Length: 214
Image 1 (cartoon, rainbow, N blue to C red):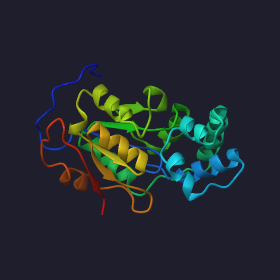
Image 2: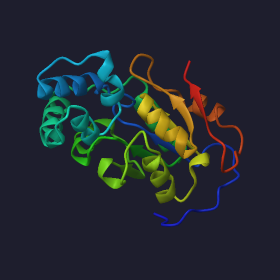
Image 3: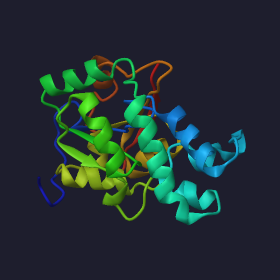
């Protein structure tokens, strides 16, 4: 992998597609809420959503007031993922299309690598790069994971499409400068044709934006 930022290409379409994992490619958000509630010993409410959805496990442990719960949260989540994992509709088709079109892909997850490794075999796709929580000093909603993914792929965020579902992930990808497509288990993943149609130009280094998947 290139270690330095490459000059942005001027070809039509993105240089790479950067995909979130939880809630985007696999329907694990419910499992995550179950795990957090079990470890916290109380049901979660809407007030917890900004601090639980799409955030790192360390962030959630701090929200619960017990940073030492990170290990227990990871274990509880991993147990549920291992026994009850659903791939989101359209994920297999999109990943297969990206592979056939030779468009580089990165998995950019707020989950630790131990969770990512449970999910990867179910996706059946050879990602060019995997960014997990441990790979950047700050996780989502900070832009660091997406900036690092683009850097390692030898491009810039403004030449990448990010596919996200959570407010924290959307904020991270947008702040990095990616074009963001919003997906989720309720309506599946965008098609490759839709993804390409949303990226018909060659944006400048400061361009970015968010497009909702119909």
